[in-house]
Image 1 (cartoon, rainbow, N blue to C red):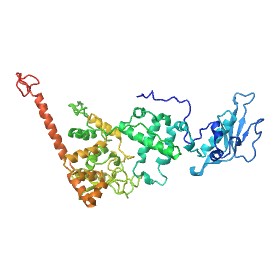
Image 2 (cartoon, rainbow, N blue to C red):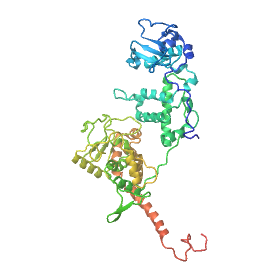
Image 3 (cartoon, rainbow, N blue to C red):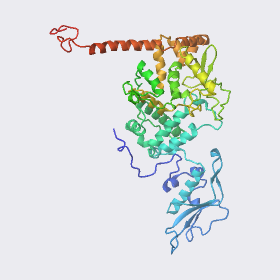
Image 4 (cartoon, rainbow, N blue to C red):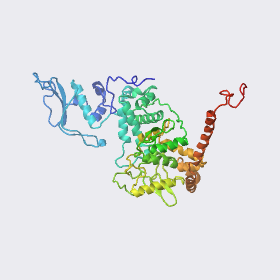
Length: 532
């Protein structure tokens, strides 16, 4: 498997652009007249007017919108004069873009210096410059395999991203996007572009890519798998849109489902205390520091952890993902935010506090047709007093966002800061990887310990709402939600944890108890000298 340095490719030529205009003079002359005229607007290279005193045209004909001109270097150049001959493109009339590209100004009237040093090369460079500025292209249906494999992955992905992943001007989503997250696709494409800025289509062959992507991006195997699947989809989508009879197949082994370690009661309690600023050593012992009257447990300022302190309780009780927290309010969606900052109309989750129950409108009263359930649920009875206390505290201070900063201002973006959560996990002395989504997994542990029916928990978490509604109907869905609200509690989970701790304690006490002098080490429970 190559290392990062081994995989860096030596570029001896610029990658081919997806528009198909990276042509040599020989390739341009080999094009059919119809294709040449459709691409460049003239019948052939010889039709490009070239002004070259004493060899071609002495003067440009009247009425030409543009032409190529040769400019010789002065015979006795001064200090600031050019020392070499050059070709320039003289544009006399504004050149417009293609109608499908908006039809705006593509090339303004002025002189453009060309890099070519030969007449035909200068003509072709001028044609390519004007065609690119006008958003013309040559479809890939006639390209040889070698040219397709020299395409820049970065440029292909950028074409797909700007066409398919950018928000629509009217703010609506296409029908074929309803089961995929545009932002997630866009993120995967951007990461790939950043870590492989010079990669070409032909470089994607072989089994080196997954490991190299993980090394360069720092993404775990599961994220790598999802990212490369997205990149393959986008590359093939753009190749197909451009007419290429070529498909990319990335080596991208499935890492399988990651094992999720169960939470312990002590681990969860320390996480709550760490969100309040208390610090623990790795493994769980309190971290002690010198105080005025002797050693005391270390504590950090926790003014920026208040939102996470609420979230650590809220996520498992409501079986929710942390991506719904910052926009969650105590007010219904039709009420505009008092801070005057924008809040998406179709993404306004809220918590409704009534005398009888507390309902979490996870979808903001807007039907969501994605693959991640957002249907609301009832806040469990065991957790309801805590949520009521939050509500009363925030209403007294006129704070409308539930998961807010210490001064009541809201967090911008769809998620709370991961870095703060990482600090909380570290201060809790938790050894091993913990992410916010594991708090949603904890809900399953609580439900199983409370012997909550699987159907009730599934409805509470909205993991299979369509299946349950189709099997049992809406009437039972209401009953299941109420059952989940009444039965969702930590008690059974904590009892299991206490029982496990008691078992471990008995073994620990037995191991630490003083051993009788006549009993050899390692023979506890049976006479010395006899085999079991």
